[in-house]
Length: 321
Image (cartoon, rainbow, N blue to C red):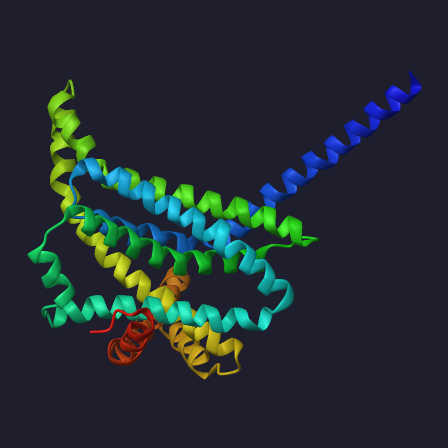
């Protein structure tokens, strides 16, 4: 009997340790997740543009496919790599993040370039000759998952840096919780955003009061504008995040003059206003300068990517013209 009591006592002790570990993981995940808030907002702003132009019935399935790809990016691909790099090759993290930031700058700058200088694309022309919605959806999903990979890498790296875990297993558990939580937050929000017009249509037809029906019609009319604004915000977010990654990476590598100048300029701009607005104005000024740098760097990368990197990759992949 005493042996059974001792065993139960041991089991209770193990359960307490396990519960404490779970609490520690959740607490660490919450702290680390808070550090990634800026990138999460960017991710949520970028994603809705990938469902524009599709039938309403395809919007949620597309978001679900992108969300699954995002979980695969974070948990299967990035989590093990992040842990290996952090514990065995931390010096590689900054250069890899700068490569990802450069990709975001290129993507954002290319979109702005196409708006400023619209021109035909042989890929687009081929799609127009054979308008296959399934093919277009596949391309959009692949593009969204590719962009998500870069943003997810930034999210996981920021979270990893914020984790104060005693061992690699606690790091892994915390990163997994952060990855799943962020994915749920981002793509749950995106799903709500893209279906708001359907909610508005339902209210316009079925709301029991004139106010409710009017609100529904207002939602339907407002959503195209909201989606357009989100598309613009998403492009700006790419440039801001990409530019800030590059600038911070340069600082880590010992080339901090640009980052220091931006900090000083933002400080000057921030202190041009009343004291209660200093922090907000300083942040806006810094984010704007980071974005302008990202745009400039993206414009530099456009000819490099289209004339050099693209053809070289095409040769190796067998897809060269």
